[in-house]
Structure formats: C-alpha cells, structure tokens
Image (cartoon, rainbow, N blue to C red; front, side, top):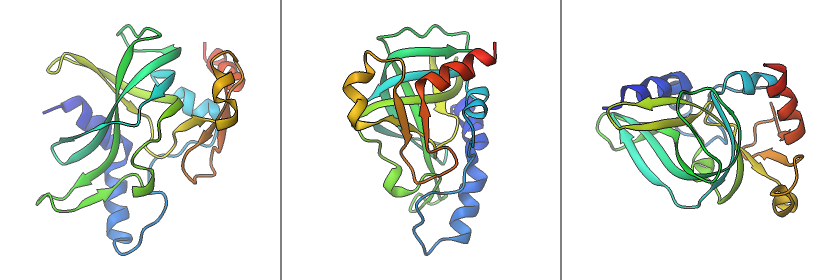
Length: 195
C-alpha cells in the first residue's frame, strides 16, 4: 500500500532482519543486524531530516504488507536540517515510522529488525536522523529513522538544561558501541561541514 515506506524499509535492513532470524532463531540477542554508523559525519550525511524531538511513550503499530512499524507522534523541538521539499516547523508534530520487524506470511511470527527490549521507546527528548518523503497516496510526509538500531536520547541529568543549551549530550539507547553518544555542538559542526 505504501510504496515509499516499503522501499525505505527494505533499505533499512529487511534482508538483514530475515537473515538474523534464520541464524539466531533460538536466541535473543540485544541488537539485530542493521546499518550502523561509526561517526557523526556518516550519520548526518545519510539523513534528510535531523531534529531534536520529544518522543511520547505511546505509539501505534502499523503493518504495511509484512513490514511492522511503531509510529510515534514526535513534537519537533529543534530542526537542524531538512533536505525534503516539505516544510517542517519547530513546535509542530511529525509522524516517525520506526521499523521494528517483518511478519511471517502467516502473521504468527516476526523477524526482529530491532531487538525486542529496544522496540518500544521510552518517553523523552531524542536526536533523530530521519529519511523519507511525501507520500501522495496518504497525503503526508513519511519519516523513518535512517537506521533502526541507533537512536539517541538526551542524558537524564541534562534533560532539563537541554531546552536552553546548545551542547546537549545524546546517548545511544542500544548497546551498540559504534557511536555511543552524540554531542549537540559536534552535530552542528558536522552539519556545517556539509554545506
């Protein structure tokens, strides 16, 4: 139904998720196979939209074909970069489609793209690196994290200060060591270096 979302999901690692299930069907690892970034420059280059957003605890599950998403209504706190042709304003809400898995053809099982313990996001302030485009059939902008296994949340101790500060530290919420955290000042430098 949603061609754009399906193609983006394939890029994000559907094949890797299926391979993960085949190789590890009896075990429960912390992070499934997916694209991983090891530098701020690389994750910035791969994103069309970069925002600081408030992610709510609540989400809705959407299945498109066999692809399973958790959809969050994210309030945009700060817009760092927008390479889409759609306007995104600070203070408004955007939908973020987070790829979590692929259902089997019979709908009884799901190959995890994101490890089960990381599938539901905790409420809070996140630094989001998103890709997507406007879907004419749905008449809305579809935004998907550029990798399902690297999402960055503001440190608990600096969450209150982050509303005022331009130097917040965002920690990766998974156990992936490739890029454990991103500092907001370093993010701004990486964005400026691409201009």
